[in-house]
Length: 224
Image (cartoon, one colour):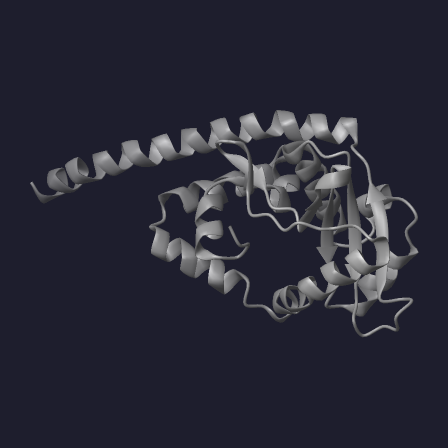
């Protein structure tokens, strides 16, 4: 299954995916908003959901990342000698899963590619020595760290290489590779957050179904 295809989008529909898993790893408004978002996806017709996905990826930054991802993957293979296999969606539970940017089957590893639209972010990524520094580096870098940890969990991988790629830089500076290993504390948080979020999502959907049945009765009563 090719990533970003209609089939790929549909299999992700209403699921808690690695790319936004950080949003359910806590309490409060962020958790609530993330779960409501997935409940909304669940009630949408497929055609409307696909249109929403298309609109979401139409930003200049998103398009930049998509345009350069294949080039970054090829350069990673050249630099490391690793053979990267592209994958679709790896299901973890019925309501969760992830899509790493590639797996290295012979080494039980995987990769996560970022092609920053803002060059300053690439420089920030280039400075780091350990993947844990991503937890407090840029606006989105914590999300990237949790994304890698989630995919490590979902795919039972031993590591994930974080790759920052900027084709505007010279050959030496255009790619930074930092290896990320399993973080037991965060893996536990992710593993415990998924069933909690799943249960809340089901409660929301059940309430919607129940109230939608009541709407007809309520409208009839209003007409009397």
